[in-house]
Every structure is written in C-alpha cells, then in structure tokens.
Length: 189
Picture (cartoon, rainbow, N blue to C red):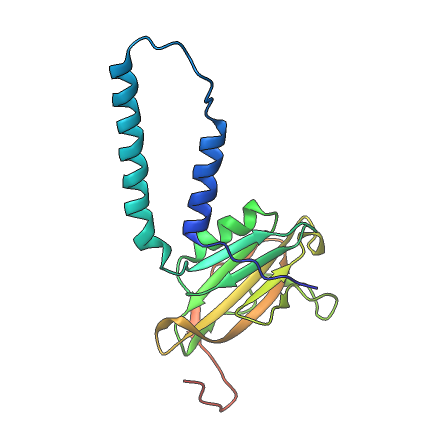
C-alpha cells in the first residue's frame, strides 16, 4: 500500500526552526553584559521575522515536484509541473534511484532506442498512486539500470501532462534526440 506524503515548504521551515530552537542551550548564565544580550535577542527576533516574512509568501506556492523516502525504503514522487527535470533526477539519485527524466514538447518524443531496454513485464519500474504521482522501489533496479521517463506537456502547459512513457534501460542511456511523436491517429491536445 502506497502512502502519499506531502510536506509544504512552510511546514518544513517550521520543523527546521523548531529543531534549531531545540538545539540552543537555554541554561541561565551569570549576567555579564546585559546590553549584549539585548542586542543579540533583538538580532534573533529580526532574523526570525525576516525568515517568516520571506517564507510565508513562498509557502502558498506548490513545488514543481516532491520526492519522499518512505519508511519501507520505497520512494514516492509527485510531479506538479513538468519543469526542472535535472533537479528531479538529482533528488531521485539522492534516494537511490538512477533516473533520466525528459519533458518534451507536445507532438515530439525521444528517438528510440536509447539503450538496451529491460523487457516488460519482467517488472514494472513504477507504480501509480491515486493522485498525480507514483512510487518506486530502488531495490527493483540492478546496479547498471536506469529509470527513463519521457513526459509530453499538454499544449505547452508545464502543469499538464499529455502522456509519455516509462521504461528501464540497462547500461548507458542515449540523450533525448527529439523526433515527431506518433499517437496512432489520436489527437491528444
């Protein structure tokens, strides 16, 4: 059973601030110079206010994607906008999944073959969630295997997907060379 977990930027910031506050020693010390303490306290209050003033407007924005390591070792991925694929590849790599992510314009795809394809249904590289996401088990991949995801944006809107493909390639993955996509006579715009 896959569990979708989403942490907002504001919640993550508050968790980090709480962790920082917990790490500060609050033991009373003999007062040496009250003026220094007052200046330091004022500086701390100003810094927290600046962080909150900066973070609150950003907290309402939905991130382009989220990658979460689950307690069972699987990785949940939610893609809200089809932008910054290299950042998503890096986050997946940090969680133990080697991946190549390509977002291509509607009507185009990557020239195939891009490498030695691992046959399906030997195993499914990812499992869909109820919402706009999927989960992956890094243990499903061999040491020389890469998850390859190609997504088409709908009419140039990076927030909408219009299909794509997923597979696993053993060995090196060729770069995406754009070619016209064939949709089998179905107009998917």
